[in-house]
Image (cartoon, rainbow, N blue to C red):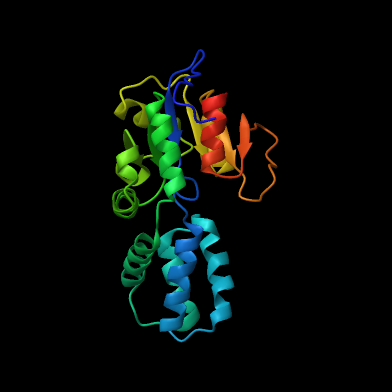
Length: 226
């Protein structure tokens, strides 16, 4: 499906809006690795990682709330800001770009598609992950909610992403794992989308993705072939 001569834009534009965490880059694994190290350092039982994963809620819980939950549970004297900094640095240090994802992005780019990351999160952490992993080499640009002042699914952040690539937003594709932020955001703008199910079932009744995929490579293949 990744033939270089496939450019099936149809009535749309070759703009690919892509989520970052648990889409192009794994977040769940790096967070677990940091969490296990942190719990070991504070002398917590290893099985408490399940509690910490529940608190984190797959990254949906504010990082300051995660820090305060850790302070409260273990009576830590370390400041919340130190925990937040450790969390940021630990996730970045453990994040890797899958070479197959990099290859898929290169093929998409060679076929004429323009990949732009649109991600919620802290600017310092998200940009560090993009640059440190080498993902920036495969992107036209990116927009991060903290620096943009607006988060997905607000239509403005998608428009900012399109603007940074100097492209029209109408007719673009969105790939992501969040039913609300990614697929809901795309739906609100009338964009086609691919949802990364990550073992979950689609339950939203108000809208649905154009395609469902089990990972970013399959998602990119669906866009290129569709």
